[in-house]
Length: 235
Image (cartoon, rainbow, N blue to C red; front, side, top):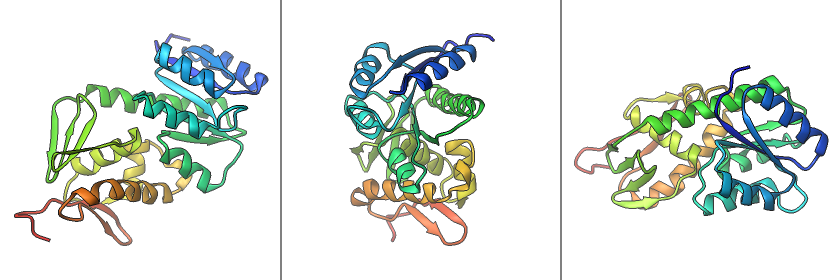
């Protein structure tokens, strides 16, 4: 197996699972580090700057959601793939809300886990390849710095919120279906759970709407969503 050159940090308190993931991901060509708790996860992530973190939700000290919040507060934008025995939709939504990029439930196949890791890394590479400013209507994105401004005021977005907003802006004034959004933002159909798109659109609106003159992300019932530009600030 050829080396990918990508570094994976595994955060898993169950030793047998941690060892299995370490062995299999090394076999898949990744450089792998592993820790057993949230405290060590934050310390190692800050020091080693992994390309992606595979993070168990249930940890002995801090839950995975808290770990990601801490990472984001430290401006560490490393992608995160959650692992959890909990498959309730609200847990998946919570994982993505706090800044995770994907969520898999246990038990899972190693092949699927590896495929999802590759998909997340491809998205990250595309982000890194982007350059210059993207300006559409009232919103501008500095794609070098990953900074987003609404009428000149900066807003903080999670990595996935950023990808969703940029996708909608790149397709301004076009209605994008939920399936299209899932395909381009998550790069797979997320088990058909279209509610993930609805949740993320809601998160974006809560951050954008207070600073915008118009409702920029509009719902087209039964079809999808559209980022609308306005002329002469008309409602």
